[in-house]
Length: 162
Image (tube, rainbow, N blue to C red; front, side):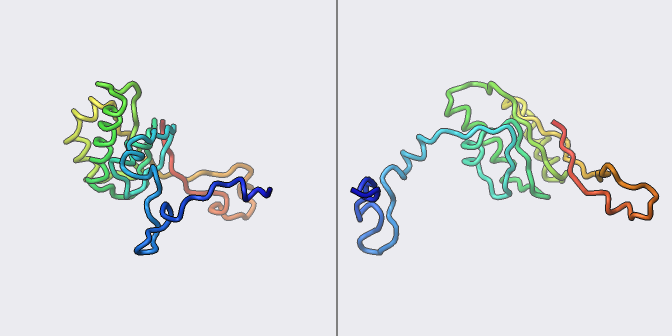
């Protein structure tokens, strides 16, 4: 008996639609299965610009880093909607842990959203940290004044304060 004999094969109807030849939905991959998925917990999560409320519902983090230069209003509202959905999923009236949103850039959209949603953010225990600041890191061991270009001993970085 080979190892291949031990592997259960899915019926053809579960993997391909008979009429189109395209992959069909596998058992347990429908709406009921999606609703039963448990969230993933992280200390820091980098948020793609395309994230929606479902992302924030499924990815629970202590810190969300917004990596886009100009977060859209839709993305910012998804943070509130996702956090509200997390509470509903866990049957909580208020969050047991705070969440910090760390933008990498300041923007007018972010400032307006922060002001407009202040009450909701407070209720959900969502803090918006100051934007990460760009800095230059001086590498140690650089030969000062030895004819070495100082830019060779530096690198640009973002400083995040938690």
